[in-house]
Image 1 (cartoon, rainbow, N blue to C red):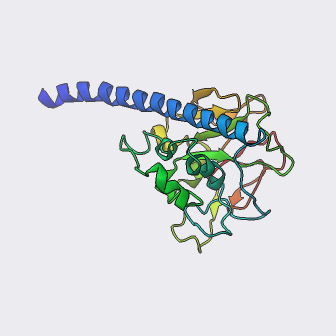
Image 2 (cartoon, rainbow, N blue to C red; image 1 turned 180 degrees about the vertical axis):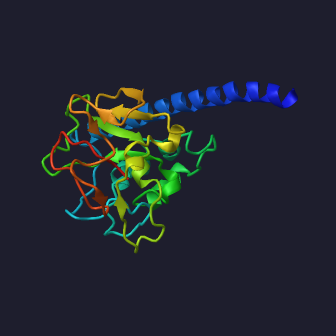
Length: 231
């Protein structure tokens, strides 16, 4: 009877905790969105960006070398320049309620997030033909909970990335919220929790590229309508 009663109590408590993390995650994304707005206002209406070369690997998080062009380096500018607290880049659901501590004063010593555990969101990879200006379609996806395709990356950045799509990967939501869905930050600053990866009229999968089944970590969208958030 005691075990049965405990089961009845624990289940709703777990659900309440997940709802709390979901809402706290939304508030974090809103703060990141505010940081992007502040950065843009100080930088001629540009989104945070570092120079990249076509074909550079976007998955090498934490590697601090000058030749690193990871996709997370763009958003790291917000932490490095005090627009966003570094801890806001870790979803509370992914960290199980435990904050990843990094003193903002330490951020200036890095050119990217120190390691994967310091960032559990995925950021839009801009296509070559897309403007880096902040003035873009407000309903475009900008940031979302961690892409399930790239949750586990090679720890050694000298190794190569090789992710092949499968039926399972195509149907996974982000693990940040126990696979229930993902919070998404749009260009207009709004945040929404959605239970699907397909967005818009075209039902575009925000975690994959069109007509791409194998990922080596250097792919980019061919057009603006193909949203792709990674890593």
